[in-house]
Image (cartoon, rainbow, N blue to C red):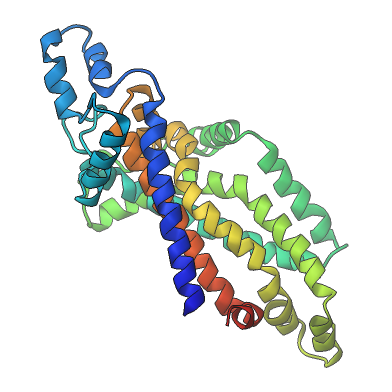
Length: 327
């Protein structure tokens, strides 16, 4: 319990530090949301309305420390401000609308990549030196070495345009009404398959190689050799004794990737015109949309910290040695 409280305290401090950086970094960029909106409408807004726009967007000329406490107060009350990019929509509404698309795509792609990569890594390590070990890692490394932008374009052209196996763009068919109907769900899944497949193909090599290297080291441990000497079934030795301990570094990588996958899907959403907060982040940077940038950064920060906290708990469950050290 003491260790758990220490970890919670550590993550709370990390969250505060991230929120502080989240406040200061956007303000280092030139311009402001109000002037960006004025430039966007190219003089069609009366310059005298600049002050009212600054009030609307929460732009303050007070000292930074006062602005900082105002920001914390607004954050505490769930007020993330008004978005310039999607004016006059509040940031909360923009993120709530875009977040499910990004979360579903990122989670599904990462889970498939992690699961298949870890299993393949354990298998090629168990059969190291075989034909499988000679083919799978180099082939996946080849795909991961291709810049993702080009890999996604190639898959989009071949599988979407030439073979017409997948839709070319969007998150669902425009003829379908969004909702929980079977038609909409089928259309959304159909549109998500190719972006998810391209993300899995580009990222699976890291999971395979990480698991393979860790598995080879684990296979030389005494408890694995003892299990083999007892004549236990190969499948049990591979999965229960070796893979269970070898997967720990991959779990740490999974926790970190789970948070950063949201930002990493920016190129996915650009190539496939897929709705999500990654593309909204790009628009926010272009429009000097402080409020939307801060809201998205905050979401990514919370996702990364929560994933790492879950990884800490998973370590204690999977590895008894960790429980003993922490107790």
